[in-house]
Length: 259
Image (cartoon, rainbow, N blue to C red; front, side, top):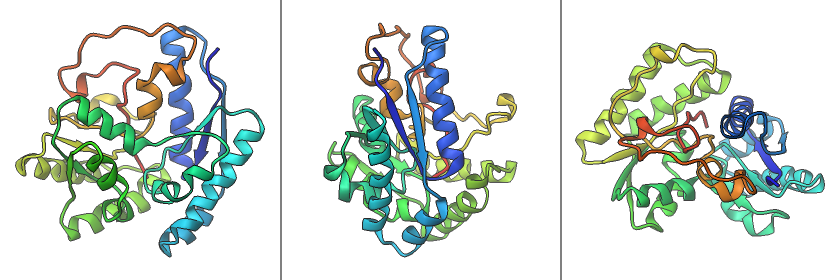
């Protein structure tokens, strides 16, 4: 039987997209079937008070509170579709009543699998200036690059003012793509990007450069690429090898990020 997935939400947009994607991935591979899923989401205001104060132990305690509730109703493991909050998760993971899939570790494993030695990272300022991806990539002997301070500040503002509320203007998309191209010019073979896809938007309007990207928001990286977790008990579905990140089939860790 598929495992019972517990989603620990932080932003409502990220949590909703994670839930929707997990269900769609199951249905895409197995008809109407998808794993049992339970989502718990404390108020974003509680998280933001702790994040803005850089009180990461407090962020960790909030994540554990959700994990405990998920565990009490039978969730087999927890995922959190918010990279920034992982800085708190790193401090309390061993105290959790259920295992966690760590999305930065999954991205690092994927980057290693693809032979990347350097990855550019975009996200909130707390993520870009924190240890979450630096440590996860270093564990795989991969270096990471971040934008200059001014660009980090602008990207953080776009995430917190637009993406968290489900808005992503064309000018914002263009700004992200320009930041990605800087990584390419600096010798990064790939970037871990955090672009949010509005599920109702026209896919043809999305910018799709050939530059390889590693998206850490749901499908969610570890869950969707790991048949042992999301589809335990289901036979894996074979896919042709991907040429670039944009060629990855449904079921691989390619999605769009808001946290």
